[in-house]
Length: 94
Image (tube, rainbow, N blue to C red; front, side, top):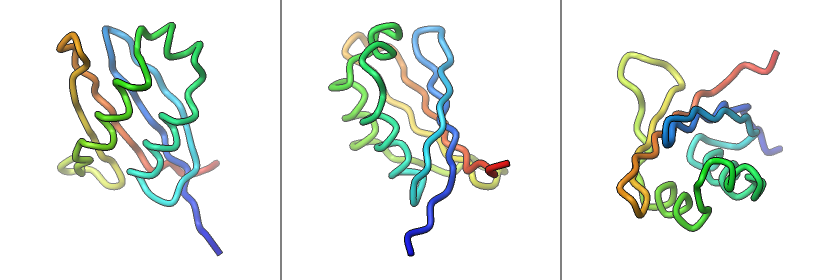
């Protein structure tokens, strides 16, 4: 049986904070699934293109956040050198 965990994804980009949740087998897989499932309307509203977001996720290094449990982060830049900051938190499904 494939166990999944609920992950909360936080994206900080161009002055906005965007929060979503996704079930996945791990934090890296959660980011990939989240990015692949984002509606085009959301991406347009955020002024972000999927072909900019996906390489940040696939080529980046998801690292544990020091001093925290079940929390990871990843950062990168878009074509305009605007920073993308992604935080992933394993979330208890309540």
